[in-house]
Image 1 (cartoon, rainbow, N blue to C red):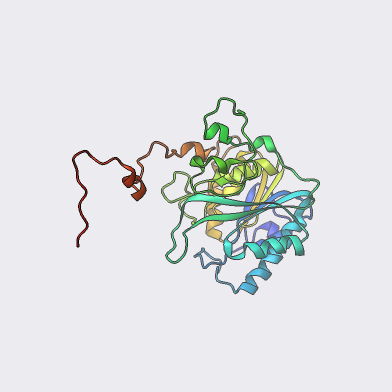
Image 2: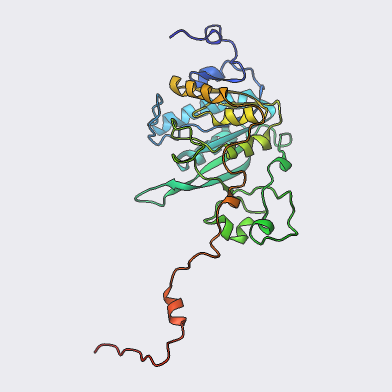
Length: 320
């Protein structure tokens, strides 16, 4: 296959497209300090069946590779840039330490994305979360647009209090079992990001990539940590959600994808997207999830023993 012109001449990858190739090689062509926001959802090294990538590296190899591509991300970030990393349990701790201790980034937030339709497991609790790290180059200078990402407060969502601030509040970053039913889980010191995982039956589903991020989740990150016209980079484009959301929200964007087939599908997805198009998915998923207050309650031994006995009915004697 003939390489594209920018690859033959080693020119920087152009904005507004997904480029097929190895992210390390493509990142190496980018100018230092040129990206406002990078979002990376790399392979988790858990044996997932990708189109071309081998997700069964040794731990040492995976960590060495991660340090190389994360180092390139740190290099291409602007001094006021932000890097978001999505990662699973297996390597979350190592990559956080690597980003902060080795690469010199500052971790502003450690978000836990709690999702419904979790991955069913047989010998441990079913997986229903992923880690989202927010790193910045300079802890005193970075983009964070509070008003662009406000969510409903507990006063509005749980208590239906008319005194609730109509603008909402800053999202938190911990997970709880039924967010809409637990008032104390919505305090300003808490940390919930609740978005359903994009499952096969969802209208949002692209249908050809198994690890698709919800557009609303990327929308929160892009709105919060970039401004219209800023450059958003995704070194593992996958299904193209980061690029699709960036285009809808008026950001410059570019992505890298190792799989030729995936890259072609991402281009098809981007071709039908226009600036200002609404994001897929519910903007406030908690509002679309019914509360359980009026639901049928399970019978418990305590509740049964507390019931008054019917008149005229004698208790049975215990067998001898």
